[in-house]
Structure formats: C-alpha cells, structure tokens
View (cartoon, rainbow, N blue to C red):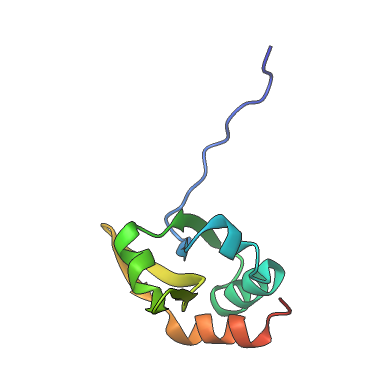
Length: 103
C-alpha cells in the first residue's frame, strides 16, 4: 500500500537548467557538487536541473578523432531552457564548472 501523496508544485517561477551529458561514464568524471553549487550561485535555489543524454549528433559534435584516437571535447553541456524545446547554451558556466571542479 502506498501512502505517499503527490503535492502539486508550481514551476512558474522556476529556472530550468538542462545538463546534456555525453555518456554516463563521462558524467561520473564531472565534479557534480561543484556543478550544483555553480548553478545555484548563478540562478538561485528556485531552479530545477534536468539531465539528458546528448543525441547521437550532439555526441558526434562533442568528440574529435585523429586517426584511430577519439577524444571527447565536451563531457557535458549546460543549457538554460527558454521554453518550447528552445535552449540557450551557457558556455561560460560550463568553463567555470570544468576549471573549478576537482575531478
């Protein structure tokens, strides 16, 4: 028996951040505590974070290959969701997360 009741939540004044990751393996190499701290520092505590795997095209654009060696350029990308599947990439925030992270 499930006694947990759903409580409606008003998302009207909530900033939505989308983290697109290359693969779960690459996501585990990101300092997630630092990622959360930087996002909350920038957008406040009324934000929600959605994790989404990159599409195959996005993964292709996030890698570089030289002969047989494949390098991952972007382990993750950070977007501000603007609505109707439109997102604004936050390059400076990504760079800050990578630069200040411990992994």
